[in-house]
Image (cartoon, rainbow, N blue to C red; front, side, top):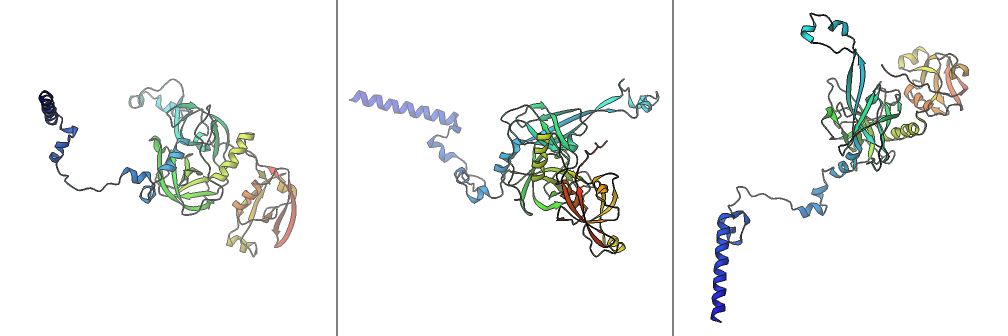
Length: 391
């Protein structure tokens, strides 16, 4: 028994000696007898526990849109375009004196011009929506995905009238964006703009919906913009405007700026327009709209007075295309269109939207005022000609 007790005492002594050595050379291991040696904090801080956030307390949810970003950001891609442009100053640079300052130029008379933009994956099999002006006239289009891959894209079709284009890349199970339910966007809603400004990489900015149905901006032929104060900068074009759940409500398209940078006024094409244009392009390769062949202008109070009209609503006919649908129906310059297909017209933009929605080949009633007399005509709607590319 005495021998066992001696062995026990020696073991305890050895263990304590080992602990003392560890405590001396490895104080960071935090042995129990070292707790008293931890210095007091300079300032007492109060930190929330990780458990509080995991339980979904108001503090964890309020002011954070990380879940919305997590859902939406994989669907937003970077678009690189390049094209060959002809040198216009080659003869100027071939002057032997000037070449001392500008250096030698290549033998060919073209050079590469590249630009950046954004796009949104709308289907898991590789369809991408972007702005037409991002890919317009490009000779080569590359898409950088969120996982780091870079792939070549082809243009499925474009619609310059709304500044939208559809691209196609090879792929399966790609992260497609979720569309918000139609007509749920309201002024004051929080929105997030996601894109690739200045080529910095994926960037998220926050704002609210400032206005809906913005038109008369002279940006596109058909305008029904969402206005937002979320920062949209060069390179954001074609990127996603999403709600606070990460659902797509629009495609970022343009900014109002006198400096080239964001000034808190950005415009996005609504998701409803995006869906309509995208489906037509994927199905038919282009967008089909109605057309009657007229030039119109809004009716100002001054014009209404000069024509002795009692109303300032409607679209004033400034010109008629010869042998077009309106010409064959008997419409003349100076007529005031007030209704088409039994739909009242408020202004020229409203008229364009109504006519564009009509099926080419259909015959619809048209109401106009001529010489202060109301008249009814029948008109057979034509197909809107394809808009020529901007040079």
